[in-house]
Length: 242
Length: 74
Image (cartoon, each protein chain N blue to C red):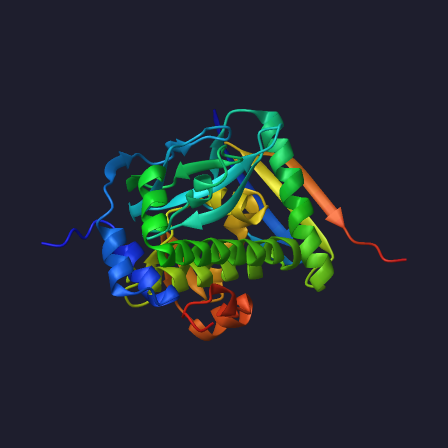
């Protein structure tokens, strides 16, 4: 029987990179260690030197950076099928934190096993290269979002992007999907306070755009949401020809 | 530890903080109220949706502090 532990990663790579079945089977066959993390548990800390990469099997993680006065910026939100620390294959030392947002299951694959696979199948290296570039494209959009959009548009954009990415790995049912962030964490992602976040969420509900309750988003009016988010998904390069 | 509510006025629009939050440091509450007022004012002033932002903070349902930020164009 095929091991489906990293199925979300395989599904995403098949859609976004057009990887061959042989390459994907070789990826699926990589040995891994499954570990569980609790909500808010640190996976990697700034300064760590990991010898493995992880695939998110289940749950949500964030990458974040904390400045000296203790303020934290959430840099990216990661979902099942993501490789949130692939960069450490080439950059030995973590320059930010990787934290479990919700209870998480992660599959850890040794750097040495990934290196060996890339040497024997160079097209797997191309897949990872493209995936790393995609990671960078999402970061670029995050900078535009935090730097230029008003806070309510910013939140709408984060929500639409998250939904598009969750949809790619089959994690959206109907109008609802998981976004297991507290109001404080949403604020840390947007660069505003938790009180401002609360105010925006209340306005979105009053305006009939969406509801956010206990880590679940429910879209009430798609048209209004799109108008606020001004989302252009080209930067997600979600098919091999884009 | 006390229960703090941050009620927000944007011109005549009033948004009551029904849930509130538990905070244990009055200085942290002050910083939070100032940062929230400044950040809401920034968006509202630039978009032209309001020219006066008031954050009324209640501590265990008694008035605790008020941050009022007004736009003046001269």
